[in-house]
Amino acid sequence: MNQPMAQTGAPARSGKRRIFSYGLAAAGSIASAGAQFLLSFQLLHAVDPGQFGGFAFLLLCSQLSLGVSGALLCAPYPVLLQKHALDPKPIVTALFSANLALAIGTG
Picture 1 (cartoon, one colour):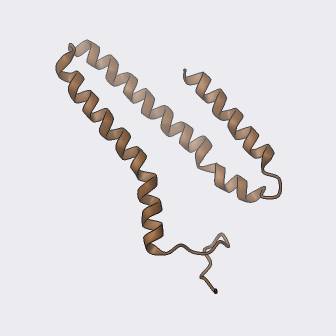
Picture 2 (spheres, one colour):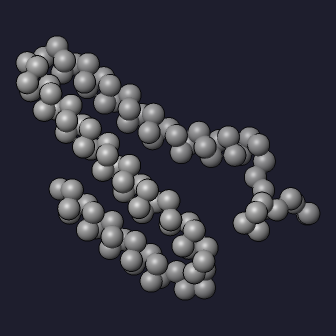
């Protein structure tokens, strides 16, 4: 029953489980990038260059907002939950409120 401990104090994951976890986390980004590539490729032939430029700019803004929301909300979530393990409700409420404000702000 003695498992090696990671630096956080939690049991270390096996190699296959860790690879599966990282692969699952990357799957969303890979699928999103693939879908956007296919849509861009189709629109490149269907619309004039001015319209495609507008679409490309909106696509860039979409990716930027996803990255910012991930960095501001998703990255600190597990750290904050671990620090406030006894009473996580205020942290969850604060992060969900920030997520709502960011969603409304970006339209």
